[in-house]
Image 1: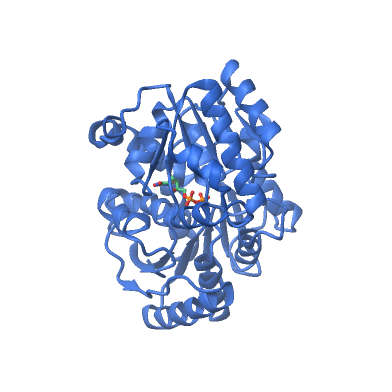
Image 2: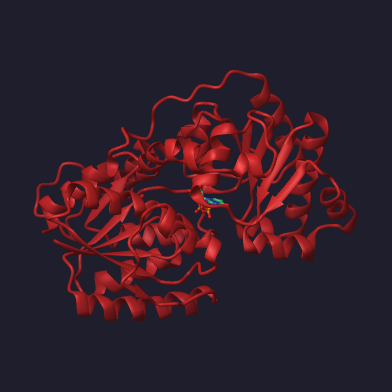
Length: 380
Ligand code: UDP
C-alpha cells in the first residue's frame, strides 16, 4: 500500500513519527510511506531537530511554503499537495491534527478522490473563531477513516452524523470512525526512557526535580492580544514569587516577538531580571519530555503539552477558555484558567496542594499499529 503523509507544523512532525516507527517495525513489507513537508514550520528548532531525534525519514518532498496569511498559505499548499498526489497516486493520504497543512491535504485529496485518513479526528473546542476548529471540522468531513484518540472525540463525530456500525467498503460517503487511543501517547511512552538517557536539559538549566514549572504560550489569541499577554505574564510572576519555583519557558518564535512588542515595560523588566525565569529557544522533543517528567506542574496553552503533562502524571493549568482534551479537566488533573489572573492563581494553589489522579484515558501505546492495520484492511 502506498500512502502520502502530510506534515508541516511541529506537533505534526512529532505525531507522524509514531506511525513511521510502526511502519518501520511492523509493516515494512506492506506499507510504503511518502512524506511531504509543507514547510509551515521552517526554523531548525521547530522542524529539522525532530527528524534526527525521532528517527523520522527525510521527507521526499518539501513545499517550502513558510509563513503567510491563512488564505495564501492554504492555497499554495493545496496546489503543491495536489501535484504530488497526482504523481504518486497513493491509496490514501494521512493527515494529522488541525493545522493549515491538514486542511490543505484534505481538500486536495478529497477533490481528486484519494481517501483521507484523519488521525486526531473528532476533537472539538466548540469555538469556531479558532482557525484550528475550522480545519478539524473540514478535514473530518472530507475523511474516509477517522481515528479519534478519545471517547469524547468519537462522541463528537457521532453527534455530527457519522455512523457507528456501518459496514465496509468505506469511502468519503460511507466513512468509518474509530476510538483508538492517541499516537502521542505511543510516542511519549516510547521516548520517555530515551529522554532519561539522552537529555541534558536539567543539568544545562540547573533544574531540580519537582522544583520547577514548565511553561509554554504560543496561541495567537494569547500572544497577539496585549491585555491577555500582560495578564498571563503578571500571573506567572506572581506564581514564581509566591512559590519560589523556577519557571522554564521555551519560547515559540511568535511569543518572543510579541513579548517585546506588547508587554508592559516594567513587567518585562521584572521578568527578565528575575533569575528564576529561564527563557530558552524551542526545545527538542526529548528535552521537552524530560521537563514534563520532572517538573512540579505545567502551565500552557498548547494542546500537546497539556496532554503530555497528563501522561507524565503532572497537573496542568491550561491558559485557554476551553480545551479539546476535556477528559483531563473532567478528572481534575488540569484546570482551565484562560488568561485570568485570579483563576490562574487559584488553579496553582489547588493543583499544588492536592493529590491529583491520572486515569488511563489515551489507549495502550499501540494506536499507531492499529491505524496501520485498519488502513491496510480497508484502503489497500
Ligand atoms: N514541544 C517541543 N519543544 C518545545 C515545545 C513543545 O518539542 O519547545 C512539543 C511538545 O512536546 C508537543 C508539541 O511540541 O509534543 C506541541 O506542539 P505545540 O505546542 O507547538 O502545538 P499544539 O500541540 O498546541 O498544536
